[in-house]
Structure formats: structure tokens, C-alpha cells
Image (tube, rainbow, N blue to C red; front, side, top):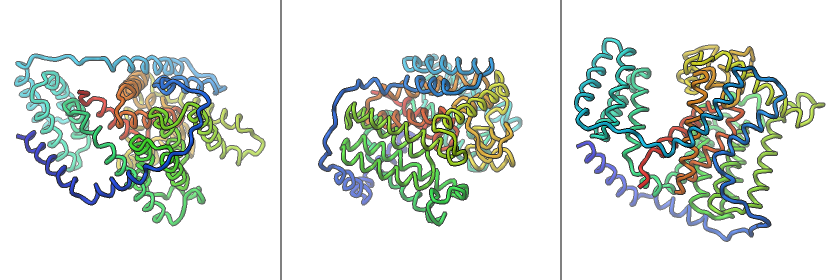
Length: 469
């Protein structure tokens, strides 16, 4: 019944969309981007495998090598586990989930319902117990779509009442299970719609952000903290749309114009992360779709790396006029690695803050932890006695929240998502791979703690779970 209603709703919206002005605008936009292409520079070629998931490990090791500070035993063990976890994750792409006989479906369903009722009396205990029959129900592969769609809808109702701790785990788990029942071609066919939507949503909220701020934050960096958090986050949809549009159009001239447009707008907001993201992800996407040559991708990546180093060291150069760019970068990396080392020793084996650093990415929850969790990086800064936000490498937040175990699992997740997306040569697969890889490379220093980044990683994870046939 639910499946039939869902199918009818999708069919209805599809008919309405085909007749809509929005589709006409989208078709006109992409047809406009098909212009005469600029000449190619092709002095030498590079294999496509150059942009593979293992580039993350190479950059990560180079980053650590630039630090001139020693790392403790626990910190070193965390780095080793991170690398092992990443490699383990790349092999999980071939993992086939186990199955249970269908005869266990109804007993497990009854046990799950009993746990749901038990949560009325002790939600914390019965919630944890309920995860066992919930996972086993999924492994029976019977009525998966109907059961978990009901769980998802019921959880959304509970979530709307403000019971985040109760409902959120069920929302996430049911989404993961439902993703395995969906044909990925549904999303692959609609990449132009996604690209167009992301571009205009990002542009719209960039405009709102600038108007509310009353100028360009780049020109007033001391006041950047007054930017609206929600508007700023939604404006970051622009780089995502830019990468998708490059994959859709595959036009050299249009790609250059889209990248320049996105870089300028993101730079005016005063955030170097988004500038580097646009350049890195767009470069990867253009290379994988053969929009640019090996010569051009080498030049662009070199320029992007140089720009990233300059933006990273600019503040130190301004404050300490006698320090060189190399010394400024090395000092920054050393401090970041030192903070990671502190987080690793604080977190130990199973973690100290038990997820609070990552939860602080949601401003609603951050406000519930005054003086501590204005944001994940401010949370870490408070823990090490700093007055500003602090970066602790990609491993720091995982270490302090979930310990060495969390480092291994988190990096295995990253390896799995990157390697699986890399195998998907669809337009959406290429787009998401380039965006996730770019965010992961940037996150080597900054960490993966921004809400929109976590959201993109989760959506990418859901996509790789969809059916490939």
C-alpha cells in the first residue's frame, strides 16, 4: 500500500515537473552553457588513476611529514589505525551483506515492536536493545521498503516533537536501509536537476547572506562571525552545483566560467575552504570527464595548492612579517598535529566526549552547551585552552569523541565511500566522488566537522548503497 502511494506521488510530481517553468529554465540554462570551447593545452598525458582514492593517503602523509613536532605513542597509534582503516574501507566495496531466512521476519518484527513499546518506560535501554532486531529484520530482506518506510515516517513525527535523542538514530538507520532498495538510476538521470537546483539555491542564499551582512565579509574579516550560519551553509551549495554542472555540460569554456564565478562569490564571503573546494573538486571532475588535459590538470592542481598554502599562511605573514611562507605553513601544521595528539591522548581507546564535538556541528545543539560548543572547532579550542577555533587534523574530532576505535571506523567509512564512488562512472557518481575527495583533502587539516560537509558525506553514503543495476 505504502509503496503504491509512493509510486503514485512520484509519478504525479514527475508529470507536473515536465510541464513546469522550472524545467524550461533549466533546459535553457544548460543549452546556454553549450558554447564554443577554448583551445586545449596537451603537452603530456596523465592516466585517470592519478585521481584515485589513495591520493588522500599520499597527501595525508605529506601533511604529517611537514610537522616538526614529535607525536606521542597514542597519537602515532591513531595515525597507523587511520591508514589501516582507510585501506580496510576500500576493500569493503566488494562486501556482500549476510542474509537471514524469511521465517524469522515476524518474530523479529514482534520483538522490535515490543522494544518500541518499552521505550515508553525506559527509552535509553530499549532503544539500544531495539537496534538488534532492527538490523536482523533488514537482513531477512522481507518487506524492507514497507517496514522501514513506516519506521522512518514514525521517527519523523517523534522528531518533530523535539525528541531528538529518541528519533534521530531511527531516522538515520531507516534511511540507510531504505537506500539499499532504491535504483540508483533514478538519481543518475536527474543530475541536471540537482546541478541547477544547487546552483540557484547557493546563489540565492549567498545574496541573502551578503544583504544581511551589509557588505562583503572578505573586506571586513573581523566581522565575519556575524554572518548568518544557515544562509552561509546554504550558500555553500553553489560549489556543489558548479561541480555537477561541469560534469553535465562537459564544455571547457562553460566550466572555466562556472569555476571563476563560484570562486569569486565564495572568496567574497571570506572562507578559504570553499575557494579551495571549488578549484579542487572542479579540477578533478573536469579531468575525469576529459574536459581538461593532463597538462592542464597538473597546472591547475599546482595553482590550487599554491593558493591554499598562501591563504593558510597569510594571517601568520601579516602578524609576523619576518616569517616565510614555508615557515608559516610548517608552524600551522605543527600546531594542528599537536592538537590532534592532545585529542588522541584525551580520547584514549573509546573516546572522551562521546560524540559531543560532532553534535556541536548543529547550532541548535551547540547552543545547549554554553562556553564549550559554539562549533566543533571552538569546542576543541576550549579543551586545549585557546580563545579561537582550532583545527586538529581529520583525526582529532574522531579521537576525542570516539577514541582509537572511532579513528579506525571513521577512516574505514571514508575509504569505503571514496572507493565505491570511484567505481561508479555515472555523472552523479563522478560529481560526488570529486566533492567528497576534495572535502577529505581539505579536511586533513580542518577536520570533517562542518554540518554541510557531514550532510554531503552521508548523502554520498546513501547513494553508494543504492542498487547499481
